[in-house]
Image (tube, rainbow, N blue to C red; front, side):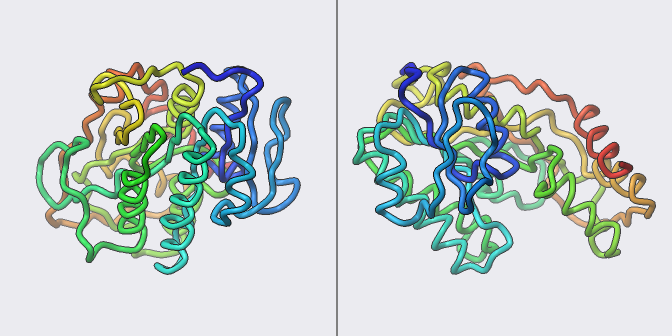
Length: 303
């Protein structure tokens, strides 16, 4: 699939950390974008970007915004909200948008999920796309992200790709790991606690956005085998993670920047890594190194 310049790519959450970077990556690739936001004048102001204001979980709006589109990239999940809200928007809303896209003849639906859907109990094991998922007793965020993926798997008539990144680093006011978590670490001793040897799984938002944009603009071709590309007309999950590290490296960086000491726990933890062979076989390569990502976090906090 190659996206013609006249057929836009729809991006939900276009003013968010991930969504805004996806919009920028699409524009860089020559695509036109329908940027979906909830309030007027919130979308990125870029040539080739048209703002659409509305609730994508409303069937009428969903049908309207996907009409004539080449692809849809869904980046919205109300993380931190109660279970009911996360289920209504993250699960049911995502499915509503995907069904509207399928009904409209859109070729591709890319959903930004999370590696938190995997059961990463203590142990030294590899997590690939076939790894066990979290149980029903999991917290609201991993549970509803798991269920959103399952809902997309059941929608036919469109190629569906689910991206599963771990912790997403990147500068921004809404960034969990560059902004919100450091604020908690600064103010709350409990937030400074971690098992230092536990695995730090991460990816930079720019590398995640680049992959989503490459998918939406046809740089990644569909295939019959998920190890070669997104399955045409099917559902394919793909992990998107950079080099593995340890939690010690993140917490030492943040606590040093905010002027507090980390608190090291001695407890069982997951010490494996997230396999990314599938993404690499599709042509994706992370470009942001851990040292660069951590330096960005520290510089932002000191500023």
